[in-house]
Every structure is written in C-alpha cells, then in structure tokens.
Length: 174
Image (cartoon, rainbow, N blue to C red; front, top):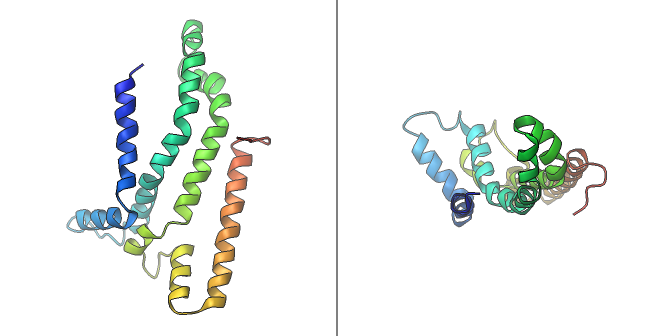
C-alpha cells in the first residue's frame, strides 16, 4: 500500500552493502569508545554488525514472497476480519515459512563465516571459527587450519540443513 516507504526501506537496507564489515566495525568501535568498554560490548557489537550485514539479503529473500502474500490474501483477510496474530498464524506463516527459513539460514551462515566484526572486537575470551582459522593460517599451522576449516564447513552445512528442515518444513524446496 505504501510503495514509496517500502522502496525507501529496501534501498536504505541495501546501502549497508556499500560499507565493508571492517569499516562498520571500526565506526562502531570509535562511536562507542568514549561511552563504554567496547571489548565488554564486543559480543553484542559482533551480533549487531552481522545482523546489519545480513539485512539486505534477508530483505531480498523475503520481499517477493511477502508482496505475493499481500497481493493474493490481503483483501480476503481484511474482509474476513482476520487480523493480528491470527492473521500471522493462519494466513502469513504457512506461506512465508520457507522464505523465512531460507532468510534465517542465509543470515546465519553469513554471520558464522564473517571475519570483519570479530577482527575489531575479538579478544582472547571472544573468538570465532573464522578468526581461529585466520590465526592458524597466519602462523602456518596448516594441519590445524584444515581441521578448523572442515569443522566450519560441516557446521555451516549442518546448520543450514537444520534450519531449512526445521523451520522450512520437511519438504522445503525452492
């Protein structure tokens, strides 16, 4: 109904693609440094950066299915008086379940493989598999790096499959 607002929302979310994760992390580091201990906020800032970096992909994944649901079922649901949580449960959830699962799986895998945010906010207490892999490769521990890479790859495939199957349903196909 509000095409301009939707186009503005989608365009603003896509603007994040113009900013590398390391630049965004550095900006947040500088922004929060005078007010808080950025290393104590590290886990939350990593989550924030990863969520912002995944936002354009999530919006692109959900945009077309949500528009389809609105075009096909909006007037019907309004005429039947189906609103709020009932509308979500009865009309929208069955139709958006698979696209939501795909969006969640994509954002999870993008966040899991991110190196930019953890490079800025990581510490001895806060590390991720990509950062560990980077450190192992940097110190030429290739056998350990291969094992870490295999673990990361297995974790990505497993989590993607679990989210697609669990949230998307048994027969989640695209």
